Length: 68
Image (cartoon, rainbow, N blue to C red; front, side, top):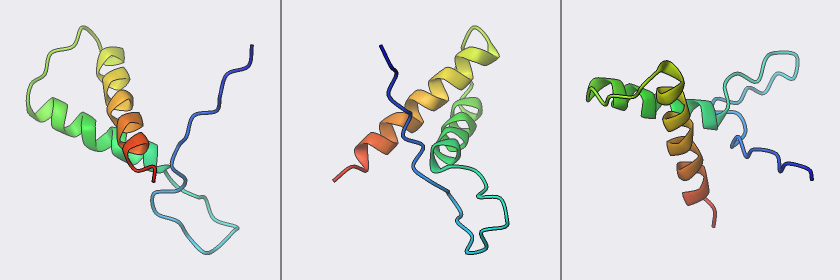
């Protein structure tokens, strides 16, 4: 069984120069914003993995919500 690729939302800050890095994805940007909010509100997770898993779950939900 093959896994579906993760929708990363494309580049968060696209550049017109193809020789330069595409930078972080929109998914990473959303996850970073979610993580910042979680840490600022002292949400307790068991580990760093718990924080990052939750942050990417929020990011995936935001990407899903953007679909037409």
